[in-house]
Structures are given as structure tokens and as C-alpha cells.
Image: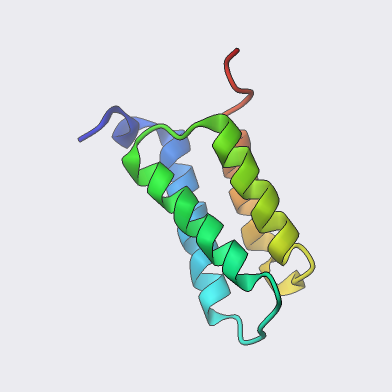
Length: 94
């Protein structure tokens, strides 16, 4: 067990990412940047499993995912949940 196993922010991120990945997999329409969204969701899932994610990397992935699927209204609630989970991590330490 890692220290992140008890971090509710990581648990929230895992849940939100998992839900959006399922929604994206079930979405019947193909769109040009679907692969980007799938890759970045996989990266977010891996970060949540490996430990406390790096905030700049979380934000970069979120931007790529939002750009890739932001216009797909059927996925907007899942995207919002992922964004909210990323925002739980706050600003990166300087």
C-alpha cells in the first residue's frame, strides 16, 4: 500500500477517470482526437495508481483531454468530474 491509497483526492481521480474511460469506450461516434483522449486518460489512470500525481502533468493531461473531447456533449459530465478531481490537487508547489 502506498501513501496515496489513503488520499481521497487520488481516490476521486481514479473514480472520475475510470468513469470517463468507460463512457468514452461506449460512445459510438468516432472523432479525430479520440485516440488522444484515450491515451491521456490512460496516463491519468496510471498516475493515480502509481502514487500522488504531479500537478503540472495532471493539468496537461486534462487540457489535452478537454481539447480532444470537449465538443462531445455526451461526455461533458464525465469530463467535468475529471476536471473537478484534478482541481482537488490545487496549485503545484514552487
